[in-house]
Length: 337
Length: 103
Image 1 (cartoon, rainbow over the protein chains, first blue to last red):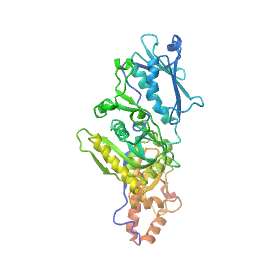
Image 2: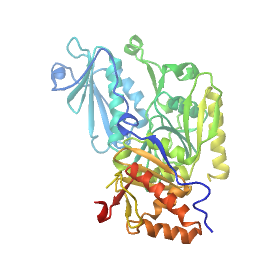
Image 3: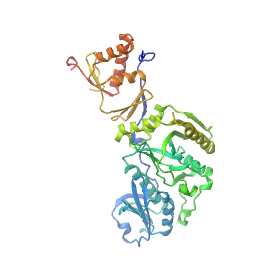
Image 4: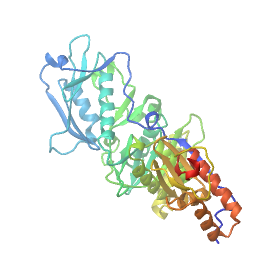
């Protein structure tokens, strides 16, 4: 006999609100006092010299782009920053960014998107931040056919570990630490899952390492071009292949899902998280969840049903990486339940 | 009609709202209401009741079917079903077609 009415009475538990506009959404637009962001015609570029440096083509998920600049140093910086997104020459990229370093005073630096000026500043960091922000946003928005989680991801032997969390929770730091230990790099920003196969596509943007993590990853400090030594960035942009040349993951199968949370001084701890609770967390962390709610819910259900789910409190990077490594070994040896 | 206050009687048909996405995980329901962007997690009993909302069966027929399946007292089943439906209705998870006397 199926005792469906005993012992408990029916209960509907309201999960955490999944408010797409205030939660998971494309990365924040860069902020800065000395930046002007607006759409204008090309007056900034009227007097600009020849754009001598073209870098690309690149693919950030479905967003294809190249970057033109008149500044050889900035060109070198862009080459390095985007190198893991490089794709073979083929069709013309959908987006051409133009970064000019001698725009008319008072603006020195300016960036345009397909010929439309979008940001100007006397500080090169802000136009570079704008460029990164725009690439990340377009990567998410131009890939609607995939379910995209605000998460970092690493892999070993084709098995992916998804580290899903809001900003400032340590996703990038963990990804960097794990790549350093020999894991393959998927992304530090957006894990893209194919609804039909559940495979994760790589989005190997440069790891954006915040100042707060520099002390635990000192070996990853990049060489800066002269202008950025004068205007030191708040984040290091570290291509994963600068850590290990063979680190880029291909398509991978997710089998471990974690929600990391960095807490200074906390004991590093990995605890199992119920699948329904994980599903709710992932819904919150899915970009534009409501736009394809049925598909997204179905994919997230399948993801957590086939994965080990954990909550990770991070007080120490090395300990956290060891715990993740052990969880991945469990999956490799036993398979997820 | 969703979330309206009126008496639930045995001849009423309750339908799942078209705005609700629904998945079963570990035997229990997870609902997402597209209008409110709210996630709901159902326990096993609520999930069974949710599953029974096929858009054709009346509340009385659902109660009778559960009684046949479980052998539990009708009053218990009816109480649980009505409690669940009130919760669903209060969160706009269902549409309730009132009988002519309710309109």
